[in-house]
Image 1 (cartoon, one colour):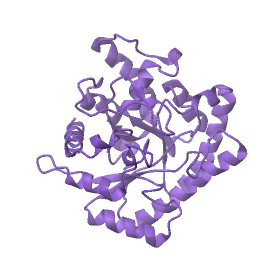
Image 2 (cartoon, rainbow, N blue to C red):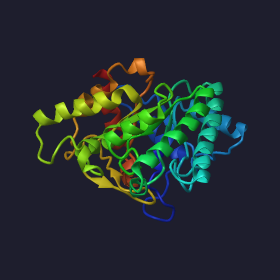
Image 3 (cartoon, rainbow, N blue to C red):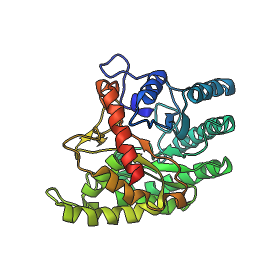
Image 4 (cartoon, rainbow, N blue to C red):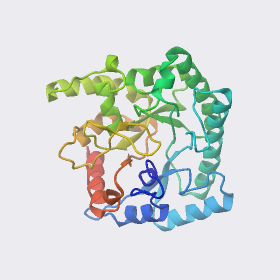
Length: 326
């Protein structure tokens, strides 16, 4: 559901899209009789108040269940301007980050007890910029790991797992090597792991924010791509707890307060760089052993016109079916 919120600003030509409308768009999609099974949720306004009462959350669960959907992974409101703040910021910032996890776990518990949620993780990131992290790479990576460990303990007690999405706009996870370093420093592999998004991880290959970590150079061919992709996925797949189907055209994009990151483009975009089903199989090998029970589509920062088109949802559903089959 977060494509209806991320990068959206009230009063502009890309305002937030309501949860009700996003659910309607989800349930309207059909490909040869197959439909979406559920939705992932962003635990923040205007879709959900992170401090909503138990009864309000149960009412939301009733609404989603009535639409014939389950709830999968949850996005914790870890960023400045929501509940949280930088995982490598001040002591107060880091307390706010952990508070966001506490609130997410509370909501998860209610959804689980309701029965609308049976699987999925809680999504996090470092919530701090790359340039801030780069002022002290070693020290800031240590701070992220300490914050994530504290958050991980809370999640573990709640029977949840945390997964950090590999977006290049967040410090300490802006390259595949930095992401691996941060996860290894956190050292909670069964609780704190990685959320692989095809669009974001494509830019890991190109070393956009970390040229020294590039595995490919512009102008590469398929004979170079797949060996490089194997290096990337072999390194991060053991940590991967959640997965996003997406496409990337090789460019970066950012709107609102969301810094430049991997551009999601339509699954059938002629400029798409990825063979989606084949690339997905690299990440999803032995997925059951890592507790992955569902896959999700991410199309953040799509124009509202694109999100409002039924063809967008039908195309990605057809693509996800191909991923499932692969």
